[in-house]
Image (cartoon, rainbow, N blue to C red; front, side, top):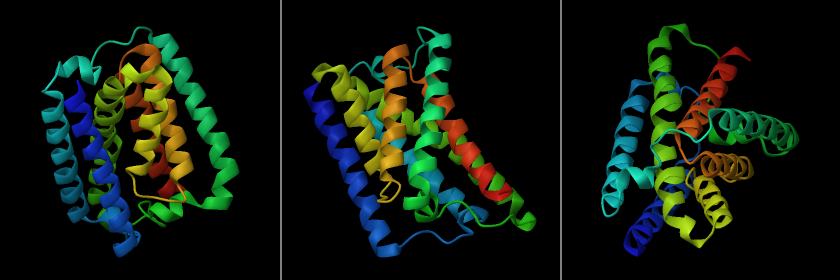
Length: 215
């Protein structure tokens, strides 16, 4: 499994580097970025490419076992851990939010609701709340976690959490993203499945988008 790990590590670190480079040269997105159909197309292509690359890397091993696409060992345990993640993130956000302003740095959430562009916003929201969590969970808590687990449970949890945070190319939001990634990795390790993480991740993204236009 050494080659898949090398390829996965190289891929996610390259992606993180490109994310930071893009942020440094292009700045944060415009406030109306989620009201544009071009955003939907760009994200769709980007995550389709990521999915294909991850699928190819996993093909060098036992793909579905590496992805952890299986029934959780306990939905009750998954629910309890999920609640813990939400509470932990809420506390962390309340402490770090006023200091770091992570949402402002990312720049994806609009400052106001624009009914004329509702269709594009809904399409982008569905993509961010469904496709993005699925691909990211498969990439980090699926393949990445499985490849790193041989070096220890907590090595896999902490490493995938850190790389997940870095992959977003953000500085001020990095502590929150890393914490969220660690929480999702812990969830995956305790229930042996990425399905609960997909749900938590999707709900988290969806809640952020709804709050942005309702606030």
